[in-house]
Figure 1 (spheres, rainbow, N blue to C red):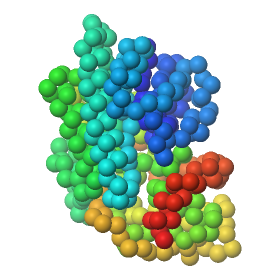
Figure 2: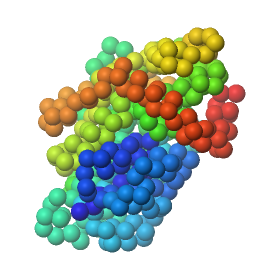
Figure 3: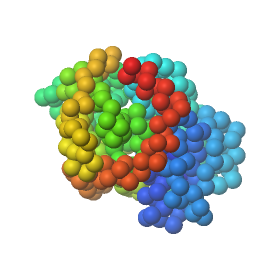
Length: 350
């Protein structure tokens, strides 16, 4: 038996692959076209593992995906492949439309054609698991109830709109063609190997370089934070026991403002890697981004009730592990913080 992972060189996908191979002997094939955020260094510890194979390809390339499906006969496909940064989607939405909508459509169509060739238990047990985001539900007021799987979709950025579109396609392929799909919508992830355009690795990197810490608006936007290893265990559980056609929200049960996050990182690094001044003195408030959602929060009671999953990390334990990982892997950060990424950051925070 084999599983396919798309977008496995990205942040969450690479963590999933490493965790999968630590828990299972089942081979895993990673399909990734290696855009700016795809990094094979994330997978260095498994690159020589006989159970792991990397293939550079685009999920929109139906002829290549068709050939790979026929050759390897996977029992499941987990689709992490996505453009995922809101700021980038505001400045250049076309890549998000192409990957998140068109790419997902082609992957679904090729998968459907493959699934229709299967027989017996192979067909019955096959799963297509689509990894999505809580941002498809829109924005919450501070006193509103957290997102449930039944919430209406109200995406507010080109990124979240493209992910909402992909979710609808996945749902349609189940209801129209009976393709056995699963969808997960997760809250903000953090942890090892996260591309440093996102808040937590960006703040860590800037503190280590004694650079300013840019915070949008007043810093009071709220997110639910999920340690990436907990997300990986949830996906494995959904793949194992989720009901086809169902959606499962995955949350960390850790609502924090952006300013709270930055303060926590400053305080941890003041202790572990102190500068000659408090890291909090580097905080700079910058113009808010267009359409900045006020609050995301996940109600993860369904996955806990039906599948017995709950996060094992608190924010305090997870963020400490994250900071320690970045301190121990500064060479990885140095390799990432160059080229296109550096030009992007300079443009964003000039």
